[in-house]
Each structure stands twice: as structure tokens, then as C-alpha cells.
Image 1 (cartoon, rainbow, N blue to C red):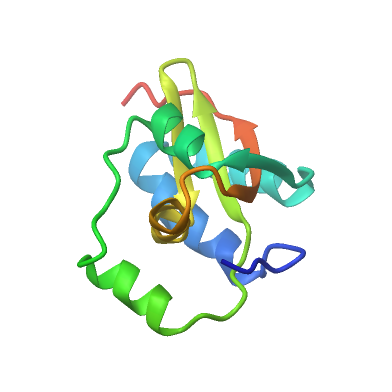
Image 2 (image 1 turned 90 degrees about the vertical axis):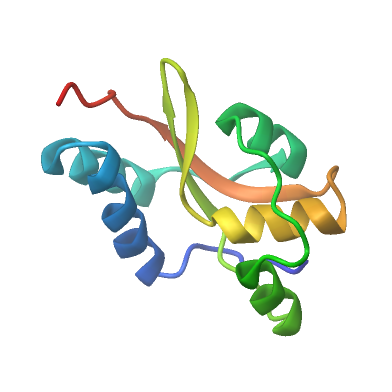
Length: 119
């Protein structure tokens, strides 16, 4: 899988949309603000899925099919970490597609800590 050198601006909005399902709006906003300023690092696809406690998707998943049918460079992944693990705020299908291609593949990502919501 090919990756863009930086996160595309629309991915921060996608991350905010997801994070507001997990966090209240102020915490989601703070996490997205931190993500914008975070450095891109590399982590293996298998380790990302393990940290998030996600079961890998299959090649038949519609999101995976879309990515593999359109092999263009993809935006780096956006993640948050919690006391209980981590979560992919944007890039879930990209990580899974990379995992299916090669679990040892390095994935560019930004990750920041986020306080868990107490709602």
C-alpha cells in the first residue's frame, strides 16, 4: 500500500465525527487539535490492530474491496490512546487493508492521548 506524506485535511473532520461518538465534544475537539500538531510515526499493521483489540477484517469487506480496487496513495492514520487501549479515529479500513497485504507493513500514523469519556 502506498501512503501520502501527510494527513489530508478532511481526515481531521472524519476523526472528529468518530471521536464525538466516544468522547464529549470538548474532549474530541482537543484530541483532533492535538492530532493536527502530532508528528507522523510508523507502527506495524498487526500492532495497531492488537492495540485497538480489533479482529482483522476479511478481504470481502466492502471497505477493503473499495481500497484494493482503487490503489491510490492513502492518508496516514489518526489514532487516540486511552488508559484501556487505543482506537483508530480515522483509517480503520486502511489499516485492515494494509494488514491483509502484509501484517508486518509499517503504517504512517499520528497518535495522541485522550481521556476517556465519563458520560
